Length: 111
Length: 121
Image 1: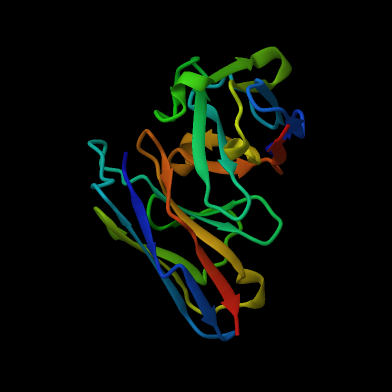
Image 2 (image 1 turned 120 degrees about the vertical axis):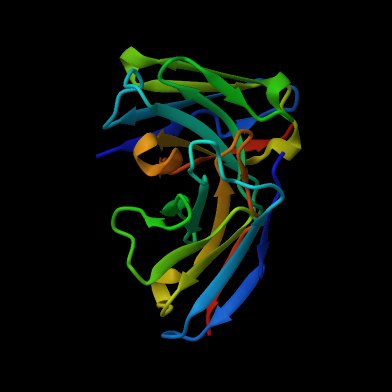
């Protein structure tokens, strides 16, 4: 199975400041179709996970443009350009090659 | 508008079989490119993918749980059912079903609210 490793596991950010989360996969997520099946999710307190980013960098419908994804192969990053109070929760990366696996999660808190 | 909702028992005893139903709307599981998956989350822990069924009845399972899982669909009822045998307290978790769509590069793009299942005697 592909292991997804996120860092850091927690971060505390002042509103208006940027935040960055790293996700590394144990093997390349680039497939023969040219796509890289890497997704980012946010699970707000008491809620179900919600899709933020698919295929490394495409924002899902309704996701603010302060969220951006980047990376390739095995190294990926989620960046929030200016953190807002509503961004608190746990962020997960997930890879879409069977069997599908998630990272351990990164908890974002507001200072 | 795609919505999904999980239903099933909130409490099961060890060794019993768990049956969960995902009832959805806003899409058809007979449409090419569509899938429904199950993901669980033990209290305070990370997400774990369990199983997935596609429009063409192709099924995928987590290798570590494959022997205990069965996923089926009823297209006419817009439902997907997951059964997990030989339940153990470590299976206590919130169980989610989610839509998997090709338009978002096969991500789980819409999720249900989840249902908490406790395994205890």
